Amino acid sequence: MTEQQLPVIVAGGGIGGLAAALALVRQGFQVLVLEQAAEIGEIGAGIQLGPNAFHAFDALGVGEKARGRAVYTDEMVMHDALDETLVGRIPTGEAFRKRFGNPYAVIHRVDVHLSLLEGAQETGRVEFRTSTHVQRVEQDANGVTVYDQHGNAFRGVALIGADGVKSVVRTQYVNDPARVTGHVVYRAVIDKKDFPENLQWNAASIWVGPNCHLVHYPLRGGEQYNVVVTFHSREKEEWGVTEGSREEVQSYFQGICPKARQLIDLPKSWKRWATADREPIGQWSFGRVTLLGDAAHPTTQYMAQGACMALEDAVTLGEALRVNGNDFEKAFDLYQRSRIARTARIVLSSREMGRIYHAKGVERLVRNDLWKGRTPERFYDAMEWLYGWNVDNCLAKD
Image (cartoon, rainbow, N blue to C red; front, top):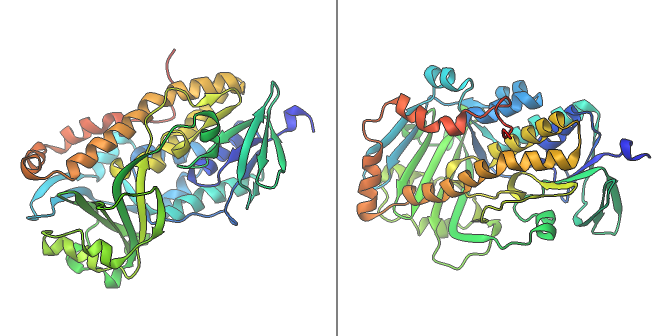
């Protein structure tokens, strides 16, 4: 096989990896996706999708698939979890769509992944290798060699490290520590028949409380509801996902109003995430290797933008290759220059948003005053930097 016929290798078959594969195919490449799990799939619960995510889906050719699986909310709404007062409301109907060119929606993470997977499979140009754990990378002037846990070597023209929050590729090239937050997230999906009628709102809804918050919104045509609760742990946390304990989650929400408290009494089983992020870095491209998604800029969940940023990364990577005639080193440099400040802003804004959500005492009163009386247009102006992203403005101007 000549160097020209070699595939681009993508480490990781999650949302970022599949989006990258689609972007690469659209630039004429064959793609080899190496996935450590035994099958290509996704775990988790619901995620929120801003207009920027739909711009990305369209650019990757899977806009209709994703739209068909999403639930379109009427508003984003924030209540104080202690006294039920309304803190802020952002309509996401026609005026929102007109402003940003796309809707706000909620969707099951599995449905995002499936939309991308179907798109990749339909191209006939993406090969998948499962149960393949990337161990190390070597590169030379013509390409990269990726070695797995069995010593198998895979040759490619370049490598996209989309291998998630505990990225092996990042460890080899950056090797920076994670920043464990001490915040624990519990997630569950509840059938509509078991979900309280007085909370069955067509909204991305958050209840904010001292050192905690609760989120709920509809999924899958309103047949299910996503429930997410977050609290500051009393324990020293290690970064990772485990089965949750009903007793633990019940112990953290004293003083929460009965209406919001219903949420933590619902699930029969929970998944428990001990969260972390990393300090933003100024370089994540190294020759013919670059990072994408959580491998490049892991963030906490408070901006609801982790998956959206991975989708944006993939589109930007494809555009950088296009304008550089598929010269990887030039394209990877333009890609990272186009993404570093924006994704760092997400990481840092997410930390600050976590503080605002979890405010207590006088800080809570300040938070509850912040958005009082704000018009939808002022909210939209504040969101322009985030939701105004699209394929036409994604590349840095030299």
